[in-house]
Image 1 (cartoon, rainbow, N blue to C red):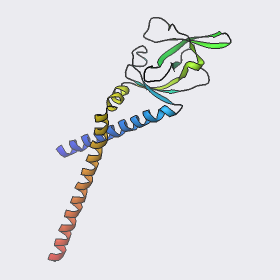
Image 2 (image 1 turned 90 degrees about the vertical axis):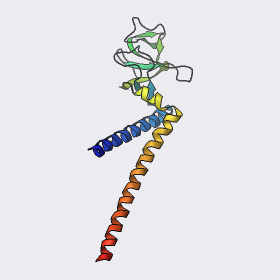
Image 3 (image 1 turned 135 degrees about the vertical axis):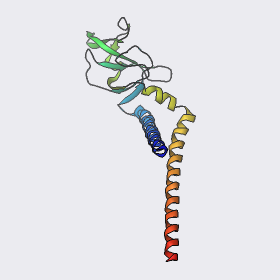
Image 4 (image 1 turned 30 degrees about the vertical axis):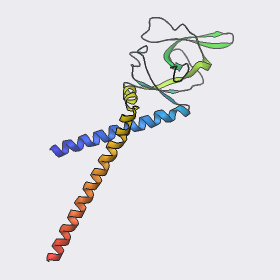
Length: 177
């Protein structure tokens, strides 16, 4: 029974580690693609998008009221904003989007131009951003790589030892006959 519980824990940990590593790699690789993955830093879009969620963003050709978009700059010092379009207007032959966070009382003061939009939110995964941020710490990242690797190597060594023991037993029985 104890062995079965340890095996379940082993596979659960291994699966979680692989998923986290996959997300980290995808998160890193998305920086150079059209699809972006970002972590939501505030609660302005709650309850639709919770703080600590990751959002998957894809550019679109057009946006309409009701769409959740991400706009602004992505840099080390500036974070983009993810809000819902509440209204569109035409000013100087250019479409302007009026946005608002679902949890905010009023609309955003700054009007959003189409050129400012990074993309539409196509997927939101609650709380995964907390895990990603935690996993980005160098020591945690190394542990996420080393622990599953060491566990797999240990399991393989156990299998090899068992096979060697079986072969020794078969060889001993064959010599005795």
